[in-house]
Length: 274
Length: 299
Image (cartoon, rainbow over all chains, first blue to last red; front, side, top):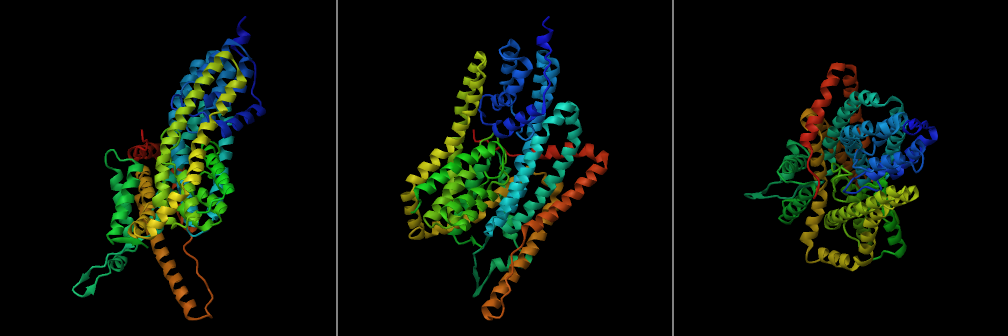
């Protein structure tokens, strides 16, 4: 008799997918908080669909709403994959799928958070940010436009993952994994290459120190250029790299240490803006 | 100090928008380099804005975790520094070190405050779930945008409205008796991008890919030295003779990036083509990433 309640008959339509994507893209992280992070965001994204699946004012809906406000945190570039797999289960099994859904959410959110942060929150901004910043440095805003176009492509990718995830379920994740790791590997390689290029162009300092030996002034910068141009920027990055490896070092601390050391060295006349 | 009320209004609105953009569609309108461009546009000096934006962008290149960890708010720092630098005629590099960095790191605490405030809304949502009040659930969720936006808008608006006299005084001192400090800040502004590069190197699997680091550095270093020399010769020639009108551009970073992309594409094809290596690659790359990652959370 309770069959009609526990095994809902609603099937998601394209309109539902679009609504979920819209809510995910423009609202998913608005409720981010320290207690349950994206918990309320997860509920917000799928609330209309939950109401359709379980029906308004049913005890099942209340239970699932509570389930979905629990702690959740993943990459906001991959969250709809988890949503898609989740809704496929709930649509089929209803409230009986609760444990499956909770386990799946907890199991997938960590790995997607790691891979999403490394590709979309670090590598892409690093590569395109570097291009935009170097062009901006010359007074050219075109690099910013290039970056915006790239991010729009990323958003198309975010929009397009919900439906395959809903259709293929967990198998999509295992299929994606090998491709994504090859992609991450290639992207990190390009990232490393770009850092090398940036070190060679974007740190504009040189030695100002010119001691006189006997009566001959020694131009240190010119001598260094004969060995290897841009040696000083490379040494500075190497020193900060070493500094960052120290215990209890944070990026903010490192920024202030570099700030004060640079002021001191400039005041002593050792280095100057090149 | 000339910042008109409409300039403050536009910049304040942008400061609120950029954090929501970063949380949501991440269109890169929330990047320091765009912040510099936008404020430069509003203040009427795009070049200085871009210069500050570029410096801050490079400084935080590797600081790319969002969600969990609070990081220095380079966007807001850029917004305030660019507005003051253009308004008070402060050297762009010095503005990075003297204004952008301190503002960006103070903003960490307002970011934390916003994240705590949202806990309040999360509890309101719990209460509305009990009542099955769907409209209110959504309303309280969307209200979460307010702490986010206001945590940026209020300090930017107050800073731009009240900070003018203070900045004017600093600029006067740095150009006068404290010139050594002004020069030091300018030099520091030029060195700070190095922090961003070093953080990136900590984060990326450098030990695995170090040949590409050398390639990127050497190719760019040789070309940029060459391009700069040619530009110097060109400038000298056009100064010597009016008949010489050709001007030379600097090195194109996009071209360098394309070399890097080609190398990465070749590596990707190799990995896809050999299924055995595919299984080995993920574990080693994720290992080194975890090792290299540095803790960024201030708490």
